[in-house]
Amino acid sequence: MSHFATLLLFDKVKGPRGRMEFAKGLEARYSDRRQVDEERAMYDVDGKRDADETVIYDRGGWVFWMLYDFMGHDRALAGYRHFIETWSVGRDHAALQDFVASMRPFAEDPTAFDAFVNQWFEEKVVPEYRITNATKVKSGDGYDVTVTVENSGTGTMPVEIAAVAGERWGKSAGERGKTAAVQDSSYSDARGTATIGAGQSKTLTIRCPFAPEKVVVDPDVRILQLKRKQATATL
Image (cartoon, rainbow, N blue to C red):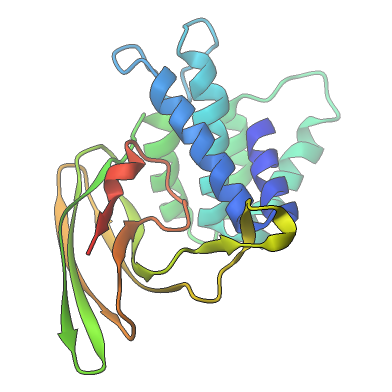
């Protein structure tokens, strides 16, 4: 809950860039500290193994935010409030299974909710997206970008893929050279979505009314993944 709450705070106070950068930090730490052969699913961690800490805090905070994003703001926060109000008045401590049971009635699609829980709580999936090919072709007054993305990791999630031009976070004189939190006016992107299963790859074409410079998988940092840098390619 602590890292999840911090993600919400960053998003509210510092804007999407603040949330995205904090999330990428958690993601990198999880990638560095996890022990693949010994890692257990979130339902099974008890803090007794060395790698449990990064699963509980870094992966856990990420997955809680992904569940919030998956359910939608209003439904998710109603569920979180219900859970906290229910479990903060007694002497007993909630298990992760209690949290899931408390959230499920607030899901718009319980079947989809169960599928999410199965992947991220009962198993230990981590997608790993890699762009294997990306080209752009002039077409009329714009460009067609064709990109092939492979998921060499595990898990299946719908993921956005963006063809972009310019730097998303521009410079602000008032910030003394630091990257601004406000999206730069010169930035443009066009997006498509693909659901790529473990070991699969998919090709899609994105129509751009501008000259694209690169392709980025998961541009808004919404899906926990490994080796995020390989999910970007220059056109």
